[in-house]
Image (spheres, rainbow, N blue to C red):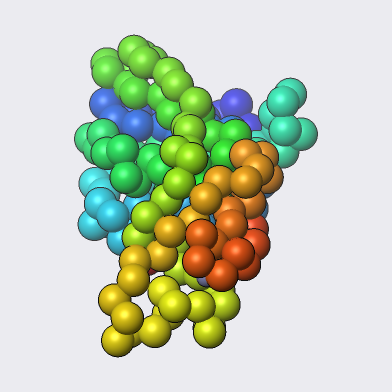
Length: 153
Ligand SMILES: [Zn+2]
C-alpha cells in the first residue's frame, strides 16, 4: 500500500481522499463528465484508513475542481476530503460540503414527478435531509433519494 501511494504522488493537482470504499468509480464518472478526461488520474481502491476502515483515493494531476463538481462528489462521498497539491505538498485541505438544496443537479427518481415531465420544464429541486449518508428529498413530490443511488444531471 505504502509503495503504491509513493509511486502515485502527484506534483500539482487535487487529491480526493476518504472516499468510501467502492465509490471511486462513481467519483471518476463525475470527473469525466464535469472536467473532461484529466491529464493523469490515479485511483487507489480499498486503501486502509483509520477513519473508514477501507477507503478509496482519487488523484488528478493539474486539475482544480470547481464548486459544482465538488458538490456532486459530496453527494456520493460525503466524507471525502479535498487536498490541493503544489510541489508534491498539500497546500490546502478541506472537507466536501453540500448546500441545503440542490437545483438542477440530481434527477428525481419518481417518474411521475413534475420535474420528469419535459413539457413542464421544472428543474429538479432536492432538499438535503441527511448529511451522512446523504439523503435528499424532492421538493415537489417528496420522494426520498439516497446519495449513493442518485442519477446526476
Ligand atoms: Zn420528485
